[in-house]
Amino acid sequence: MVLCHVPRWSVRLWACPGWWRPTSTLRALVRPRGPGCPGGASGPLACRMFSKVSSCPPEVMLTQERYPVQRLPFSVVSEEDLAAFEHMVPGRVVTDPEELEVSNVDWLRTARGCSKVLLRPRTSEEVSRILRYCHERNLAVTPQGGNTGLVGGSVPVFDEIILSTALMNQVTSFNSVSGILTCQAGCVLEGLSRYVQEQDFVMPLDLGAKGSCHIGGNVATNAGGLRFLRYGSLRGTVLGLEVVLADGTVLDCLTSLRKDNTGYDLKQLFIGSEGTLGVITAVSILCPPRPKAVNVAFLGCPGFAEVLQTFSTCRGMLGEVLSAFEFMDAECMQLVQQHLHLASPVQESAFYLLVETSGSSTGHDAEKLGCFLEQVLGSGLVTDGTVATDESKAQALWALRERITEALSRDGYVYKYDVSLPVERLYDLVPDLRARLGSQARHVVGYGHLGDGNLHLNVTVDAFSTALLDTLEPYVYAWTAGQRGSISAEHGLGFRKRDALGYSKPPHAVQLMQQLKALLDPKGILNPYKMLPTQA
Ligand SMILES: Cc1cc2nc3c(=O)[nH]c(=O)nc-3n(C[C@H](O)[C@H](O)[C@H](O)COP(=O)(O)OP(=O)(O)OC[C@H]3O[C@@H](n4cnc5c(N)ncnc54)[C@H](O)[C@@H]3O)c2cc1C
Image (cartoon, rainbow, N blue to C red; front, side, top):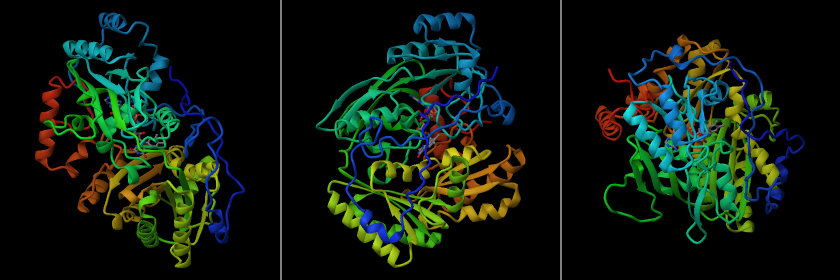
């Protein structure tokens, strides 16, 4: 039996009528921010969330039926295996088909496996015992965090065992001098954000899925997100990892040192490895101090050339306090209005920008932002704008950008691309695809982390079609490669994009990756069919 989709995020109403701001009041609106948001969270933007309304969408087609993929010769889970697992993690072996359905289907509802068992270890020792057993028995395993991944990597393709980190959710330590947090891999990002904010720090990453995604999943995907512009990649902020290898060996690289030049930096191998090289069980991460002043502006721009010039001006004038520069096109705004009933705070524009500053001096930051806004409005780069005066308005502005993914998923089947491109070419692929697809697509939209050169290109249609997939791929990948871009900026390759790896990496690099995989996971039991291309 197929379960209706169960909402995993706190449901929250996001209608925000009545706070449209005329441009003339912009300067006056640049004010110190109010206290913490209602509902308990205290830090800037701490309770931005997104919701998924419970409904009963159509059943998701099995991945093995939708795509040409062959099951590899792994063993099949037997009654004896289940008994052995029950011994290892008593009471935490899930075999109920209804419970399993949620973990067999991905967030986008475009990939579906048919796993018969999900395990919920609490400790790395339990993970180690499970993997040692699976390695001996040649049983394939899919590590799963919050299951918010967007490339079909977090769910089985066939009957792989799902190894969930949901119960590995303990904070081990937090050093309030250094800001170094050590925790288990299954801690939910939003919970960690609240925890460190209470101690005047912030997590160095933030994303729309924060209410569900796990820190282990974030590290496994090398998630980028909304604070990348300011705090950089997890490759810099993750200081140490504990990882259980395919044969059950516990690799303890869980140091909390800022500097450590002793040998190869092995943790880097696992950051972004999407569960194919080991199961991340604990993370040590550097948290920056919580900014005392955060301002959010939402602006309308007449064209993409103006978007780019606004970005240059912004970098020049806001410099050290700039913490986010996000963009979305008019069709994105249309979709969040249509599907989520969010209201635009500015007049209709071709593009919209969300600019956030985070600094330590309220007056100084507000003045800088005010000067910047005067400049871009005065020069016509920006035609309309609003600045959040308090926490709830800042959240509402962020919701317009953060909830685009959700609005798209309500529009139909979504073909998702997440590419890195030279910033001056960032939007070119969107009109190109609109012309190429014509009436075959409902919507072709572009939005993303402009400050990081990262475009999220999405095509929505009534239903999945192989013919349309063939029109899109490899066209999008070849186009991106032609600009020396990356076919996956931050979502990873997962199941859906693994065969496109060659568009971004040379054959020798792909071969070396395959050798590393064979070295660390000789039987290939960890997240098979993911990240690395199908081998002939
Ligand atoms: C609304 C929305 C907004 C998003 N915004 C962003 C964004 O701005 N930036 C961004 O980068 N991504 C974004 N994502 C994608 C997704 O949230 C990230 O990829 C996130 O890091 C996945 O974390 P997770 O815990 O849900 O991992 P899962 O989805 O469960 O797993 C993702 C991959 O990591 C592996 N994995 C998970 N946990 C472990 C572990 N402990 N050890 C080893 N492997 C593991 C899985 O096998 C899988 O391959 C968004 C998703 C949604 C739904």
